[in-house]
Length: 419
Ligand SMILES: *Cc1c(COP(=O)(O)O)cnc(C)c1O
Image (cartoon, rainbow, N blue to C red):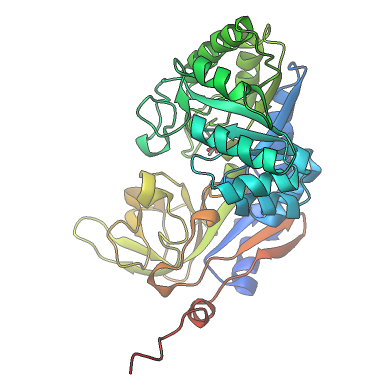
């Protein structure tokens, strides 16, 4: 459910007609709905009501906009961060250091030190040398890092290969068989409190089965670690729950996920940690775009829009599907390919798809663009960096400015030793 609806034939974000935003801000532009964001955050939290001890950390890589993060901070969400930059953002948005979890496969020593200086809640250690480094840095600062070991449970998440993270051949975590010995050694180090384990097997999961299989493996690991004398108080179950991108997609609901988690973990007696990203932010945003041209093609016409792969990379990166709907639909349909202006054949949002009939000058949106959308934007082809708008009922504000190509150019220089 979201708050992007037709009213009197015009697509609105909450109470704001999208043509108003196009007129005042220009296109392309990301438009987020605060009510939708809050609702998704609430639904996810409600789905975990049967879990006695828990902590929810929004995976901010999917939408790190400060305005968005502030909304979630007010809902009691912490943050899962994967870089020093994200760590500073989470704090700037008002999330408590205590509520921040630091994931990421290649944290630098400087980033580990930053996490300690800021007093974050937990480090998710990806492999033994990182744990050793964290111990050394913590000892140098006369402090102690709370940490868990990320394990790779070797299950196939059944999602796109580029967003699958829990197979043995993926770069993430340590093999679950190697975990007990590594955990033993890290636990013996000073400056480190090893309090549990973490996993995250992939993103846009459309079945609970791989998650359940992975959680069961981790449950056995927790029992083994306890049998070896370790105190295990925290298990971080990661994120990954899928969202509907197509009108007929039917991914598991947060309630179904919560029920499965409650069942599988009922005897664990730990604080469960969650790192949802897409399921919170995906349907809270659309990318608003204007049709520039409709150009004849060999089979079907090309609808050339003013958004491109640099604004929304997912179709080019993962062959992802984003629903495309007209802001003022007439009821008529056409079959077309939707492409952007960038000089790459990969700059294609849809091939030979039946869509609302549009003409040059019409507005349209790509739906479900609130996660892994603006955050992946670039200025490729010297395009502007796409702006973001947050709607709240009958008001909206620009929560990220459009950054003009000229501003980017101003940060470059021509060496004076090239005549
Ligand atoms: C990306 C990521 C997430 C969030 O994944 P979603 O599919 O967006 O829920 C959670 N945890 C870690 C460690 C991640 O890398």
